[in-house]
Amino acid sequence: MLMRLTIPLIAVVSIIIFIAGLRNDARDVWRAMVLALPARISPSEMSITGYYIIKQTHEPVFRKDDGYNYSSKILKRWTRSIDSRYYTFCPDTSLEFDAQRSFSVEFLKNHIESISPKFNQKAGIRQDGECLRVEFARPARRYLDFLSGYSVAPSINISSMVETGLGPFIVTSLDENEVVMKRKHKVSNGFNEIRVIDYKWKRQNDADPARIYDYNFALSSKDLEGLGSGYMSFDNMSLKSYVLLINLQDSGLRRSVYNCVNIDALRKAFMPEAGNFSYTKTILPVGVPGGHSGRPAQECRINKAAAIKYGPLIFANWRNDNQSQLEQFASEFFEKTGLRIKIVNYQAAELGRHFHDKPKPYGLVIIATAPDSDENYRMLASYYGKNNLLDFNVSKVEKLYEDLKKEDNPERQKKLAETIAEQIAASNSLLPLYQVERKIYYPNTIKNMTVGRELFEYPEIAEYRR
Image (cartoon, rainbow, N blue to C red; front, side, top):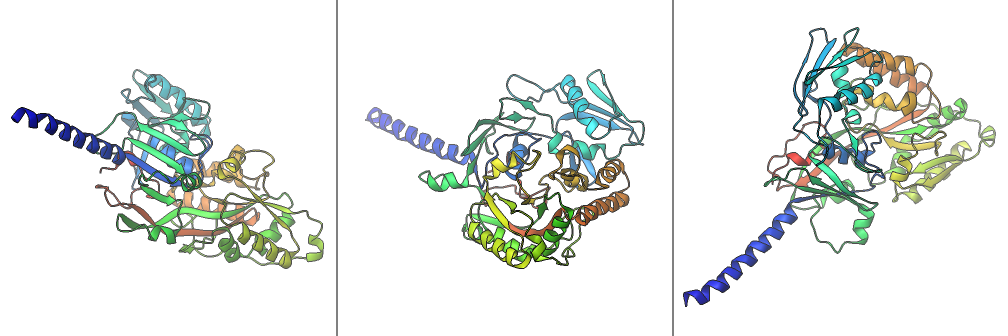
């Protein structure tokens, strides 16, 4: 009798274990929904969504903790001289990019040699046993700031469309609907897989009942509030500011657009669901050294008859939920100024591929500034040199930006950044619009959520425990 009961009992227990395994597998996967997926995964081509992914797959040489102290997850040890002219970096060679390629002192040397000229052309770099020594002719206190950027994180190509770094995850699949990342070394109480899913595709293929953990880049503030009791919320002041790039060669035309655009009307047209927000005076948002709250100064004076000579201004729109609002804004702007605006819709990923083309495919476009840092010199880099998002150079900015990169004194850094932001504003090539304040929502099943660390809206999923 005992034997007869044992076989069915084993079968029942096996089924329970199997079902529990399926449940654990489902909980093992972090799913995030976003408005637009990047076409290519690379630290040098970061969009907002691209940074979300890079944060999981890459690791910068340094982390900047509390705005002052530095640490590294990829160096076993490091030193710098008191005058910040000499640096020694000893890589952790147990780390790997993928199953075939490990981190090494040779790789670090090649990497530092390739990126350091962006900071200082005269850096001396040599291998010293299992370590690397970097020397500068003068103090270079901002060098660690420079190395803490994800845009210069160690990276290798694993395909024509994907680069991977020394982060805990690696991209295993990429298409227009979904990016899949898997952890290089599994853990038992965290997330071992990440799926970043396109919002439009998810809505059209909603048969999959799997839970989404992160809606923060896809839903409006109002929709996020309706997520229910399974989520906890945190107030977050984003370090991103939304700005209107005015990429028009004619300085008089730029001046007219800059001064005559109704900021409130454009904000409501471009982002109809925007809730809490604040105004910023320049490109630098509040929270970044040199950033100031308040509206930019505007004084609209225009000769409507003279405006007729200009062709339509191409406004590149990368959202798909605001067409009628933008058309209404363009109509009202024409009535006010005589200047025509033509709305051209792009997929965000497609537009992102053309930001560094010359000429640009836009005369006007709204962008969100620098997602990866509170460093003002990195935030201003998009208006300088080959990274310039404009088809022309703003007078004096290149010299000032070089000075900013070399400046060690925090107060002088702030003043230089303010001056650069003011010069960009004076050229009428960038109109600050607003800085968004919103709640960030995450599942309440995460056991170690830390508020206020780095950029909270860009989670480090490898650190979360469930």
